[in-house]
Length: 122
Length: 425
Image (cartoon, rainbow over all chains, first blue to last red; front, side, top):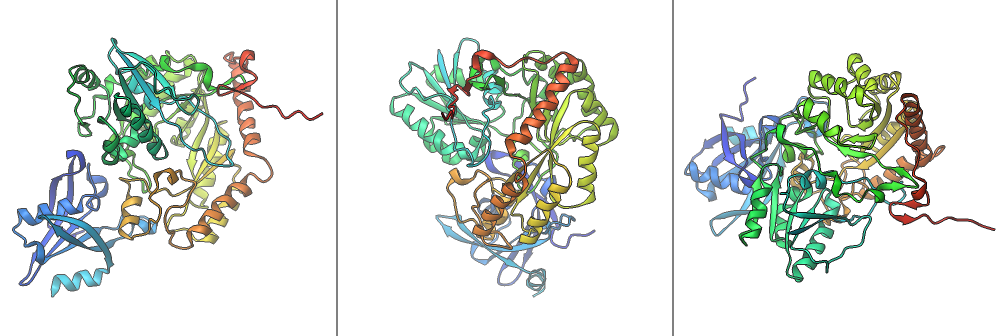
């Protein structure tokens, strides 16, 4: 099934330089840029997007000429197709502070799929 | 050169039967140390620390998150005395950045093939702050046998009965379970050891009773069957985590000496009930491992689960509350949701609630954890149930001629200390 929240598999060096991957979608808008990073769970041999998000978000911004101040960063965990609720699909918007050209102090707020779709289609 | 290898103590969970098993990670690591090094091992759970011994280099082997603060304190003491300290082991990998603050060096990854260099660097006064081998796992063929000769054997007896020896037949895990960090620690691929290497190591272990500590043996049916076939002539008796419940696997496991297995019980389904029944049909005992506090569980669910455990005839049950260890999905989920309220690693013992559960208060989950232990062991204590399992293995050992009598010289000693007898006149 097509994943509308992912256009590419993004490779990055995670914690302790372990090769890691995530799904990535970038939507450039007039006033901001939406970045959706998707956790690839078992396919990812390395660090999770959440553990590495301050470095991952900056890395994605730097490689794609995204202005840090215009970034809307979303972490997506797809449904793992189990009956366990903690494996259901979720979206978290992450706000970072920017200090000395680094992303620090991530703050997560859960948002609904409809809210993500609205952001994408605005 | 003298190297002192320390296994720090930790606080045991109150109210539970405590056994001190010979550590595994430390003896696996010890096997990789060059021959010119004289290794002395101290298990602080059983011995006092001796900071003023004449040693050249100190290693701290850390298994549990509840050991790390003690490990740091030990390192601080040695470093005050001018000794260099290196950390390694599972919880060093889980808590590497914090541990670096207390270490001259941390070793991350699996030791085989890398430790010669560490000691060469130490001798040349060029010890590196980090030896990062997280992405450089050794070929599984070169692993083992562990160097169990560093253990002070007499300490691992309870009233003359020797504790099981720990042993591993594989590394890594293809599963990525919610509360588990094994895939971060040992890679996401299951790496079974070649059977001849496993046999070679088993032949070095005098102890007839083993705990196969692999995360799950149920990851490659053919290898699992080959392993059990190879173990049959050795007549060992062993417990392990999950094995497959296919009849041909269980049959071979039973012949290979399967004593009891740990089985996660996460719901009240017929699947679990049947599985436990199948193990029992082959004479294999079952210790249920029950994780409490997942987001799916309400108070009623937990109570129903406990009732179910009493119905399905488990031999033992071990209850834990979710401990969100770093580098697990459980941890990242709870961090994102800002639900972790206690960040004292000493409390991450799987018996203490450190986060806000979804369907109840932390206090209520703590009460239900206690309720689970009390209810399951209401009619027969944990020690009584353990003794029943022990009797089963003794019968099998007597049948196949492998039974060893308890050591009379240690009959009044438990883990190196005299047993206190409560004799009233």
